[in-house]
Image (cartoon, rainbow, N blue to C red; front, side):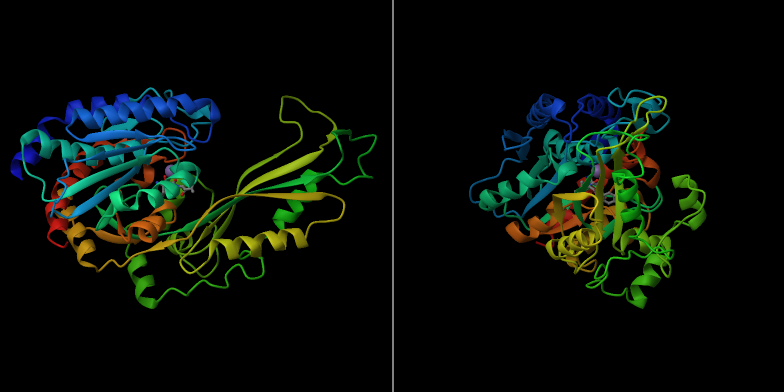
Length: 457
Ligand code: BES
Ligand code: MN
C-alpha cells in the first residue's frame, strides 16, 4: 500500500494539470449548444482512462454519452466487484460576469482550483481515477474489480442512465457503489453522508393576454400574469416558513431525538452559515435548526422567475405570460409521483380564472437513506480516518443524486457517499472551486478504501 500512496504523493502536480485539462470542456448538460462539448469531454475521459490502464468505452444514449471504464476483469473473477459513479456534466456557468476568471479556464490560487465542474463533479471522481492509476502503474494488485460509470446527465436528472443500468444490469451488478459527489463540513471533518434529499422539478406558466399589451390602454381591465403568479406563489408559504400546501408534510417522519442530537454535533454554526451564504438573516421552517432545515425537511423553491420586459429602461406592457421554474426537495418516505400530484393539484385549485395555467413536469427522484452502521459504512469510515488523519463525521445532506436509488433498484447495491466538496466550494454558483488538499486526501481515501471494502464482501 505504501508504494501506492507514494506514487500519489509524487504525482500531484501532473494530476492537477490533467484535471485542468478535463475542466476545460464546457460540458454543460442543460444547454443544447454544448452537445458536442459533452461528446468531446466523454471522449477525452475515456482516452484518459485507457491511458492509466483501464479498459474504457463511450456509450451513446438518447442524450449525452456515458463513459464506462473497468479494471481488467477476469471472466471467472472471484474478487468482489465495486462501482464508482461520477458525472462529467456541469451546471450552467451563468451569470458569467460574477466569475473572477472564465469558468472553463481553470485557475489555481493557493490550494484552490477554480473552474465550473471542479468540485461538482470532475475533481471528485478524478480523485478515484488517480487512485486506481496508482495501483495499476505501480503493479500493485487490486483486491477487487472496479467499474467506473461516469455519466453526462446528472445535472439534468440522469434520465438515460437509469435505462442504461436496466439494460446492463448483469455487467454492472456489484456489491457496493462508491460516489464522491457530496460534501464534508470542513477540511478537518471527512464525512460519510447517509442520506440525500429527493426532488421533483416542474415549470408553471400563467398565460394572460394573447400578446404583450399596452399597459396604459388595457392595464386594469385584464389580469397581469406576472402579478397573478407572484400572488399565487406568495400564498404557498406562511410566515413561519412552512409550506402552505395541504398534504405537503404528510409522509414526513419526525426526526428521532437521537438523530437530532447527532445533526446538532455537525461543526457548522448559524453564524458561519449566514456568512457563507451572504444573507442578511437566516430564514427557515420554524421549529427546526438550519442543519435540519437543509437536510431533513422538504422544501419548495423557485429556481427561476421570468415575465415581461427584461431589457434596459422601462417598457409599459401587460405581459402575455409569466413563468416560474420550481423544484421541491423531498425527504425519505415521500413518494415523488404522489407528492407531485399534491403540489400540482393545489396549484391548479388556486389558479384564478383570469389566467390559464400550464404545468410542465420535469425530473423526479426519491430521497436516499442508507444505514451508517453497515460493515461497508464502517470500512469507509476507516478509509476516511486514515486518509484525512481525522475522525470522520456522519451527516445527511440536502442535495440530490437521483441515480443512487436506481443503483439499489437495478443492481441491488447500496451507495457509499464519500464527498470531497467543501461548503465554500461554490457548487452551482459563480467561482466554483475544488480544494487541492481534498483532491489529494480523496485519492488516498480511494486507495485505502478498496482493501477495506473488499474485506466486507
Ligand atoms: N453533487 C450534487 C448533489 C449534492 C449537492 C449532494 C450537495 C449533496 C450536497 C449533484 O451534482 C447535484 O447537484 N444534483 C442535482 C440533482 C438534480 C439536478 C436532479 C441537485 O441536487 O440539484
Ligand atoms: Mn450539481
